[in-house]
Length: 208
Ligand SMILES: Nc1ncnc2c1ncn2[C@@H]1O[C@H](COP(=O)(O)OP(=O)(O)OP(=O)(O)O)[C@@H](O)[C@H]1O
Image 1 (tube, protein in one colour):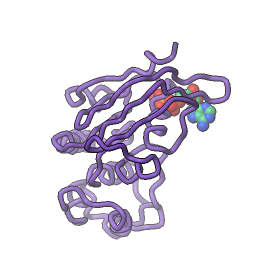
Image 2 (image 1 turned 135 degrees about the horizontal axis):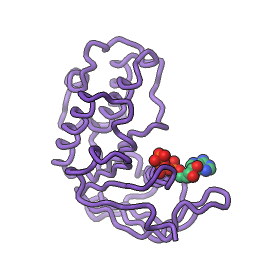
Image 3 (image 1 turned 30 degrees about the vertical axis):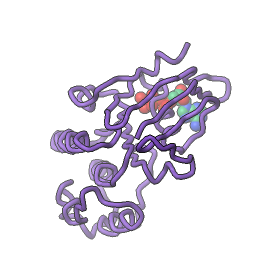
Image 4 (image 1 turned 45 degrees about the vertical axis):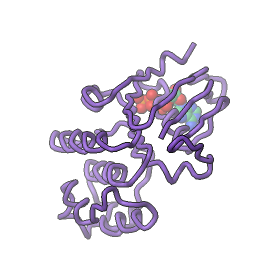
């Protein structure tokens, strides 16, 4: 998916978070969205996902060179972010089963394959509410990695992950980058994007 931002700007009350952001994210490429804490990385990802509105400017989404209407964009996107809530009352199996009733699994991986791949197969029938923070993060990432999507948005992807979890993230990211998905990673940690992303966008360049 190609995403073209035209003079995008966002402010909260009187504070401009970014202004005049004109940039194109190209199909199949991967981007690191960088900037200090509080600079606006999550805000931009939320706008790209349709969760928040920009204050001004325009976003054009194109799939196979055809513009995707704004109200259909959500079905092309996967997102893993700290503000996204999991359905805590479900077991792991129920959660994955529910999600994949609405979205297609990448390359027809089975739910069992997905649980195994994120080292959660032992927790198949455990309620998500009782997951540790690292387990919840692996589930969020698994939902993003294994959903067939044209655009994958990852916000602080390794928060709460241990060393094995970080290696798993890097491995799954490498697999994702071999697909045609466009990937955007908002990050403060170089190991989340260095050696993986083809370009960097620094929010501080759009604050003048
Ligand atoms: N709903 C909101 N209302 C008002 N201000 C907000 C809101 N959400 C975020 N902000 C402000 O917008 C700015 C950018 O926040 P954002 O979370 O996008 O930054 P970030 O770059 O993702 O930060 P971090 O690296 O700490 O996660 C901050 O000053 C924050 O306080």
